[in-house]
Image (cartoon, rainbow, N blue to C red):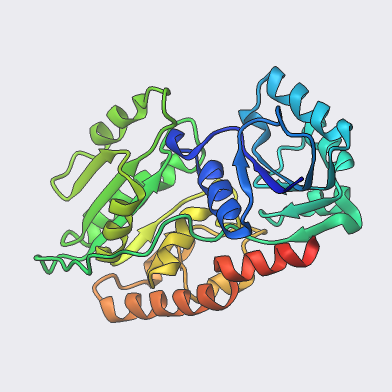
Length: 306
């Protein structure tokens, strides 16, 4: 019998964050990372990683067939987001343990005593080059999916406009991701809206190169519609390397984050010329990450459930 299976719809070659998470989790659990449930007679623990909007009709039917087959000892549903959908609620009812990564209170209510709150650790390896900037210009870095259809898009525009107006010495790099096979038409929109020699935009780059860029940056920039949450992987990548992030907060933002993030709603209180203060926030973020948000801590919690 195979001990553990870790499922995600995509694999890492498709540039999917849930897939990266699943692959790392499988490696650390000595489990098998799969994109199908066919061909397996039985497993001990079945970890389901998903964002429900990624699944098509066949994916959903196959998933329910596997769950109803009782071909596992425990089914553990890793909820990266909760979309308040019928399908999610049915999956929650069918699984033994629900891992709530976003801190969504409604998910805890539905899951009852079967729910545990965790987080998404960094999905990016530590840098290896120890590279140093040849310029004294401070630099911000942002990466992820940038779409004008997202509520957070306007905050990025306001941030870069604010920095160009008030701190012209800063340099900004934006790395725009997309799933393999999906045209990244948004790559053409940002450069037109952010027409400045102090801003460079680029498409997907491998995580190992992204890690080196994080090490060179002075801070990260990561905005989310509901404010920064415990399931946001991009900020974790900055915290891991001792960098703070400019972001917004919301009712589900972990209170401890306020000790080291730069809150967009109070941006006028921050002196971006004071790099020592910004770097000290980064050190505080790294200390908190190392003690509360790393993979070792996450896996220890998961193993305690199974």
